[in-house]
Amino acid sequence: MYVNTHMGPDKSYSLLEALSSVKWSEPWLVALATSHAASLFLILLTRRFRAFQCILLLLFALVCACSPWINSWAAENYRYFATQQYFDEGGFFISLILSLPIVINCIIIVVGWFCHAFDLMRQVARVKFKRGVRDDKKTK
Image (cartoon, rainbow, N blue to C red; front, side, top):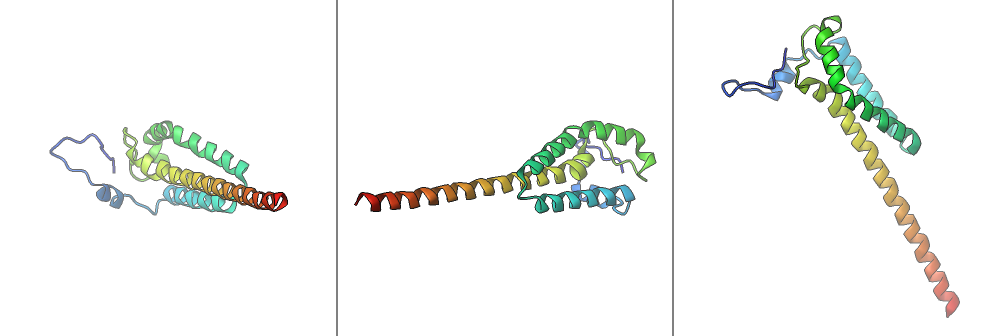
C-alpha cells in the first residue's frame, strides 16, 4: 500500500481505507505498537519523577523531529522489514503510526505537569490561608 496524499480531484482518499489495507500483524508494526504502549506505561509509572519525564519529553520530541528522515529511510528500505510500501513522500503513514502516538504521550506528560502545578498552587494557597488565620488570631 503506497499512500498517495497528492491525489487529484478524480480520486477519493479515505483514512479508513488506508488503515484497513495495513497488515497490522507485521512484526515491525507490532513492535512499534508495543513500544508506544511501553512508553505510555513508563509515563504513568514515572509520573512523580518530573526530571525523568522531561528527558522522555525531549526524547519524544527528537523522534518526532526526525520522522521525515525516518520516513525517507523507511521508504527506501521497506523491503528489509515490511511486506508493503507504506511510506509516502508526504509522511502521512509515519505521522499516523509514529508521530501521533508520541504526541499523545507528550500531551499526557504535559497534562500531568499542569495537574502537579495546580496541586502545588492549591497547597500554597492553603498554607497562606492558614497563616493568615493564625496572624488574625494573634492581632486580636
